[in-house]
Image: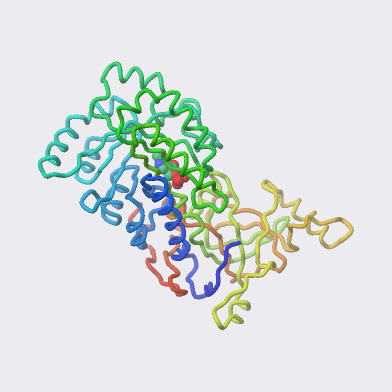
Length: 444
Ligand SMILES: Cc1ncc(COP(=O)(O)O)c(C=O)c1O
């Protein structure tokens, strides 16, 4: 569990996503080190982390942003910077509409296409924009193609861009056909994205496939984008290997410019979602109904699926901590139960606890709860957890590591309020944005 000294959880309105600024800065320091040692440029993938209200440090350290379309590109341009401030605004979309390309031309530094047909469709628009940029003495828009190296270690398949019949990236045979039909003049970059929460050893294995299928084209390229999914800021990530892979790649290929575009690694473990227990019902076990929803506020809990780390804070503990320091004890931590555990298993395990001869599983607290959200979706379940002390109505439940792929994906399904956005900086909680009825109404 992470440390949370000085955070007064009851002073934070529930529900709220809360950024811990010092943890973000520590991630940025790690990424800065990677840039410095490897010579690669690290861009923030806004699809994963777009907490722009605290982008000041991000903009100082990272080399720019990467976007999936015009809205993210605009956000990156406005809040991190564009070519005028020496920052990259890289865009990849599976398919662009003409209106999107027109809106991207003034701000994008890199436009990556997913097919030769899309490149051809917009080639003349980009060429004329580049002529204009040239006369102003500004760097042209670099045009790239996303490739599919037919190799990815990602599972489940929903997250695997190289799964059979994937629409993401040009497969080697189609790339060859494209080169035969159109050549590569005007293409200055290749892009692949095949990782998700992976270590650098996976990149090492992937690079072999990229070189096997697309190595012949690399000499003509000025840059190559290794995509996202590199879990660089995770404590056990092999950063030394990443640095040497990039350095070796650059040395082998005419010092080609290398980009990395992580989202998750920027927002990794740098904030939480705080919710509140609103009721506890009984149906073959205790089910706590919270004001936060798996479906609306933590969708990856259902999509991946994964179980977040959880702890609870009771009013009593909070009041006692008059110096503001909250000790989260073992008793407050929610021990995960086996995935797919059934409520009947919870009962069995609970009675095992009451009978010490039955060897209770060591990781399980005595009190078991299913944590569920406030929506009508029967499957709006965050997971089954055990605590050493009972959970009560009014307790705060804190879900760790909830800043990436949550806020960017959340919804107002059932009209549930969007959690507020706040930050803990210099030991103080600051509210940045609250959402209300109008936010729900305007979306419908
Ligand atoms: C093309 C592309 N780049 C970058 C990313 C960011 O990946 P992550 O947040 O896992 O680092 C993604 C995520 O899906 C992606 O599709």
